[in-house]
Amino acid sequence: MGNKRCTACHRVFHPCPQVPEQSFCSALECQRERRRRWQQKKRRDDPAYRDNDSRYGKDWSAKNPEYWKRYREDHPNYTDRNRRQQQSRNQKQRALGIAKVDASVPISSMPSGRYRLTLVAADGIANEDMWIAEIAVLSSTYDESGGDCKVRT
Image 1 (cartoon, rainbow, N blue to C red):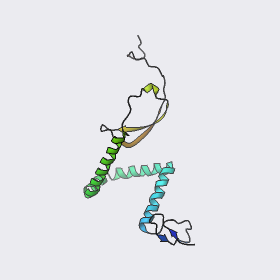
Image 2: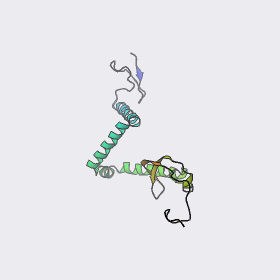
Image 3: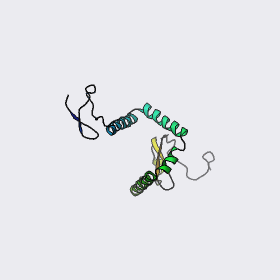
Image 4: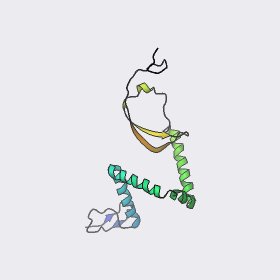
């Protein structure tokens, strides 16, 4: 078996004979990258893994409620960099009109179906929380004269 080029660092390495399909060298950073890619693919392709991973993260957060607050206090450079990056992403979203909702479309023209709902804050920025909602059009006509639908004049 000959040498291979590492997928992460692109250096030439000699794979282990027991792992003929090895594509990452044994360097610590390359192994981290291998695991990161595996986990990313697993989250994308396996709903059960994604659900378990999500529950684990929520459980951990509940057990360590002050972690991120302490981390931000202990790492001001990280906090400042993250804040600048988020401001840049927000500006791009505003410039592209991504977070804007088109309220001018009449609801009667909206077809029945499944929709992805995202909460949009007052500043026009949508967060990452998402819900899938099924909307069924029950009636395409609506009496706009006002009043309760049971009390028509």
